[in-house]
Length: 92
Picture (cartoon, rainbow, N blue to C red):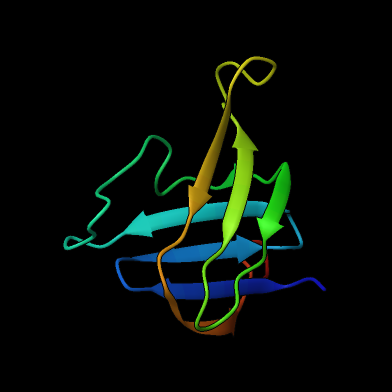
């Protein structure tokens, strides 16, 4: 499956661009987990342990852009409330 997907959770919005294989986390002001390094930046997905599913959570991994051979980050979403297909940023 490809395309771009807007995943809404209890505390943040996530964009999964499966054409470019990137993931972007955008926390909302009342996010219980707060902000993380590399929020609001598309990060190349290295692996997905749990794909987004309404009523569940997701778990995605990406390499640290400054030390890709040494450090890996992961993001586990909170409870997913909706998933909507959107136009990809690279679409015209």
